[in-house]
Length: 274
Image (tube, rainbow, N blue to C red; front, top):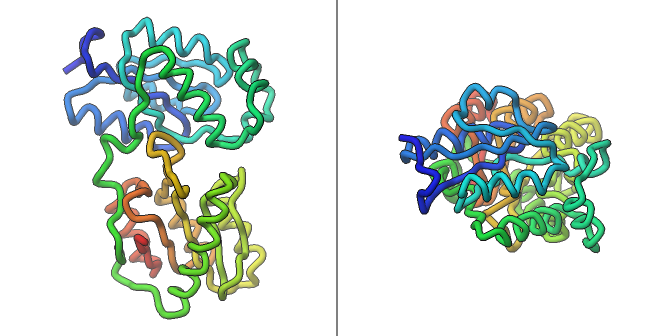
């Protein structure tokens, strides 16, 4: 069923990188919705064009054009799905006048401030940005051990230590992942992302067993920048001698959850919702 442009629930997905936009599109269709897709040329997988019926490709700097398109298509609700790399701000992408004015007016350019400003521009046009997990609730983990193996006493101690540090770092909007070994912080995620932080920790740890802790922000806005873990992270953890992944229960998306947990079980990795 294709949504009428005049539907009170006309949705659009603004698609960043990774598998997130694909999952949101599929889940929306399961509920009888056919969202408009705005894909970001510098970030979105080209394969999304093969899945979407109504897709428009815009550069990250074409903010005004994107907003005008949403209004013209009579969109009422917007889902932000997929990461946009923070480092894109320092690339050669040419911002339009609207984006330039927005950037000049910001005292900080961290993730929350940047996306928050974009959300305000969308909502200033009469639309509502909704919870990015709206269609994906089954992918949010419950509290407790999700895998066959539970963490041992030493791993639990590293989890507890890592969570305390990670929450402080996330509160500063620097990153949401900490890699720990023997109650010492080996790596802190910044712009490079979770997987790169784990790989960096592996080069620093001299083969020690690692624990990865990924948290939401203290006042996590579920409309954007929700913590995400995919199967690639489990593979990199296995290659990096990381034995535990601790995530925030109810606030972390586990993409392809069933296979992700199966991969962790095969690798002997414990996954815990905290």
